[in-house]
Length: 73
Image 1 (cartoon, rainbow, N blue to C red):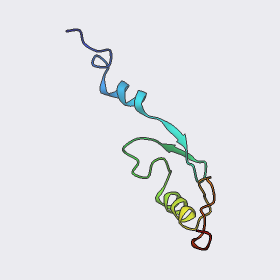
Image 2: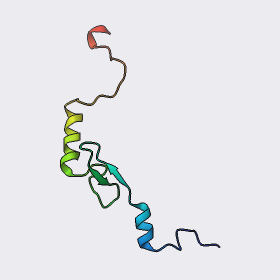
Image 3: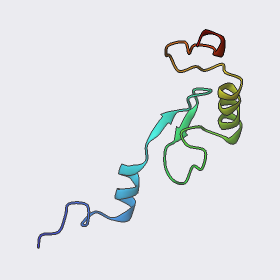
C-alpha cells in the first residue's frame, strides 16, 4: 500500500495547510476557522451572541411566502 501524500508531511505543514482565515460575518475582522476557535465562524463570543440576538429579534429573515392567518382559513 502506498502512503498518502499527507502522511509524509510533517504535522506543522499539515496544520499550516488546514488553517483557514475567514472574515467574521458580524464585524468583518479576521477569524481563524478551525476547531481551536470555539466561536467559529465568528471572531469572538460577543459577535456570536450579537448575531444570535439579531436572529431572535427577527432582524434576519428567511425569504418565503406569507403564511395565511387563522382568520383566513
